[in-house]
Image 1 (spheres, one colour):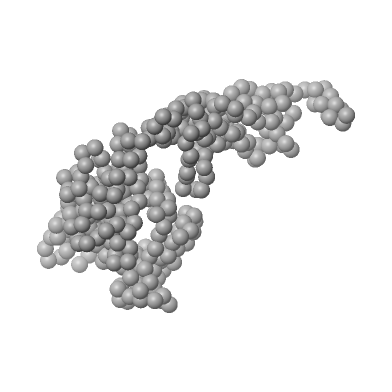
Image 2 (image 1 turned 180 degrees about the vertical axis):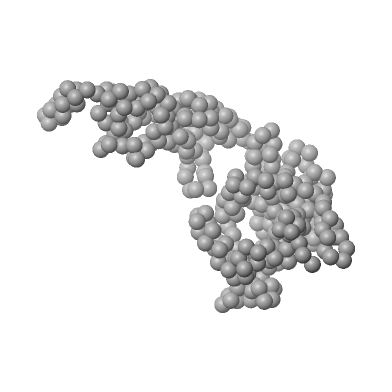
Length: 318
């Protein structure tokens, strides 16, 4: 039987079809081993640090028969940390948002050659399925289950135009009807929406106590900065925009010696703002504890004339 890539892709994402995942791996890598080698390289490029990969579908190495990864034990299994699974999910949605058109499909028929298989999505939080919540319009992303990992779920929801990603690993799985992973996901999502406010910061926003950036050979010796574009942040209940502060960090590629090279235009991107909240700790997948956003100049800075530059050079000697 021949299948299109789209048919196999749909069977993988909707129905967790192990054979479909392996067929796609062969199409991409030529062999299962080559595909895993490619996936391992991609994981490193993405900065995933706690990943082990052996099979294209997550089954134990010995369970994929001739497709097992050579040199690895039969009981070797794919492993991801929750953080790395969050990074992978975030990148998938950012780089390929069209994936959500498939992950939100609740049911679809698959032609297996002799008859049609009714595929019901294993993500039971989708509208109309067993653990749907009207207040949480979940549209992805992927479930996974094994004896060693338990019930796992990388979930995503877009509520009021604000997208969340949650990761649940090792939930209880007493049977195929066990709803534990979805109940835990619902708790995580509800906690975020009930305890945080999605807050927009307009382009041009300035922050308290933000340092000015030095300017080299400018008419002015430094320049103040503001947000270069609209930026969004989740603020904990009780924390307002007024409690935000930011540290300005200049782009060293624009530096001449110890300052930004003059002249500078008003609204020119010159670095980043590292934004923090007074009463809210921030944690990001890249390990930082601040929100990073592009910084722009608030005013124009013209280049100083040769006499001013000369006078500064002389006075700096004394």
